[in-house]
Every structure is written in structure tokens, then in C-alpha cells.
Length: 382
Image (cartoon, rainbow, N blue to C red; front, side, top):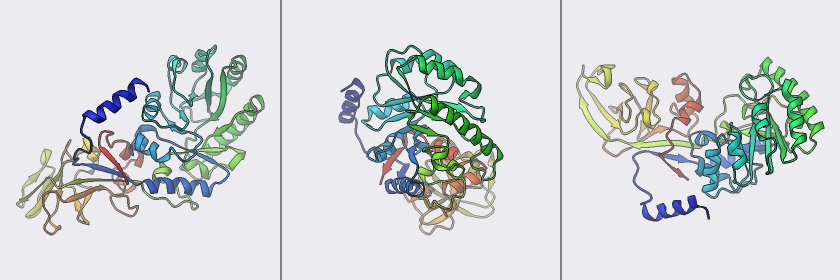
């Protein structure tokens, strides 16, 4: 047992658990497993590797990993060495691919088991040459997104380094589509042509490559099974959200967020509410506060236009969303009182306060809303 496991177990004995929380994130285990199963059934020719980076898109890195750890997955995908270490410290056994940049000295000195590293540049690979330990690598190729990955013009040098260093095992090759959520994208077609050429040449040089993957959740609509890849990285779709219409797929939202009413008061017509007096009561009103603001994931862009749900009734957000407090109009809620449950994010896709609909109001993408939910808030898997 390593020192981190010892410290964690000691803390669990000394510190109280199940502390009361004013804000709770609920994670639906069945929804996550059903979403994974849906993709597997729709695309039986593909393997799927769940993406758990950025705190599992706000759902909770360790809780989601625990849900998936028994699913016989090719690997779990994280962005950083820190995330991989956190999973191992919490006894997650599945293989892990770190898809983000990791400094070469950390790769060379890593002692984590069943870890593969994504190589994103020729320079990074050059610094791994001569490794005295076996390293499993996925080579990320820039097929046209021009963000991260080895340029196609550098592939000959990459191939030579890999051939000269027997401890560097090319387990996989990868790329990323820049415009996958556009079903008519010409840039995707151009990228796929580049990918197919590169894939063919690399597999000829390294016939033992196990995984080739260019598609994330939306990308499966563009690719032709084993002709272009044998694995897809399942990110947003795992959590029940799709930013592209896929007729093969019906998803279930996995996350909901709740808090409580922390204060109720009556105000008069003409009274201002919140910072900068951006809301003036148009009539006598009953208002309430909730102990959640932009520090807890209630986007500030929801000020004066967002909603929450109290006892099944949608209630407008009024005034500015503050750091830790949001004010709402509860005039239409019968017998509202301190402690009543408030839903901030619903796991009902049709609800105006689903994460996708909140993102539309904020003129952003669901990813941004989700990853801004702080990691320290309690996640309960149900």
C-alpha cells in the first residue's frame, strides 16, 4: 500500500463523512451505463473508451470511474498525469490513457501501472528516446485541426525514433476532428482523407498497433467503422448529451443539481434586487435566496434570464447571480418555505433547466456549464 492510500484511509477514519451539504450533485449510474451500452449496440464494430477528463465533465472523476471500472473497457481517458494518479490512488484498476501533454521526465519516471501516454509532438518523443523502461504510447497526428499533434511532415522522423527504441511501444494512433458537430463539414472529409493515408502507412510500419481513433462522440457519424478507426472516444455522449443529431442514439442525462431555499422575504413594487440594481420589482413580490452562485456553477449569464425549479414550479432568477447566492422569484410557489428543495440543473432533457438548455440561454456549449461545477461539491451516485 502506498503512502497516499494510507493517508486517505487515515483521513476517512479521523474526519467525519456524510457531512450535510447545501448543494448536491446527483449522478445517475444507470444513465451512464445505459448510454455506454447504447453506443456499443449502435456501433458494434467499435470499441468505446470513456473520457473522464476535467473531473469527468463535471460529473466527478472518481465516482464515474468507479461506475465504469467493471465494464471491461479498453481504457479510461484522462487529460493529465494528476488525474491518472488520482484514479490509481482510489483503486481504479482499468487501463488509463493520458491524452493530454505530460512532461517527458514525468513519463520516464512514472511508476503507475497500466498507463499509456499520448505523444503530441516530435520534440516530446525525442526526449523519450533511450528510455530504459517499457512505455506504451499513442501517437497523436495533426490531420488538419492544427492545434495539437505531430505534423504529417514529421512522421518519417517519428517512425525512425520508434524503430530505434524497442522500449517505446506504439499501442495506438490518434487524431481529432475539428468540425465533427457539422454533418456537412468539408474540413472533416479532408481530415479523414489525411487520416486514412497516415493510418495505412503507420500500420504497415507497426502492424501490432492495437487502437486507432480519430472520433469523439460526434465523430462516429462521419467515420466508416474499421476503415477509419476501431475505437471511439466517448465524451459528452457518455453523460447523456449530444451536440449533433444521431438517429441511432437515444441518451439519458446523468447529472442533476439541487440545493435548498435559504431565505424568503416579501418586497414591494419598485424595490431593487441584487448587485447594481439590475432588477426592479414590477409589483409586490415574494422572493427567495438559494446558497449557490457562480462559484458553485450557477452561470452569471443567467442573471435576470435564467430559472430554477421549486416544488415543481419554474421560478425566474432575478437580479445578478452573486458569488455564492442567487435570488429567485417564488411568488407563484404555494407555501414556499425555508429548506424547500430547489433544482438548479435537471436531468430531464426536455426541461428548460437541462444543461443543454441552460447552455443555449448562456450562448455557450454544455461542456462549459458542466466543467464549471466545482469538484468540491458532493456527488451522490444513485
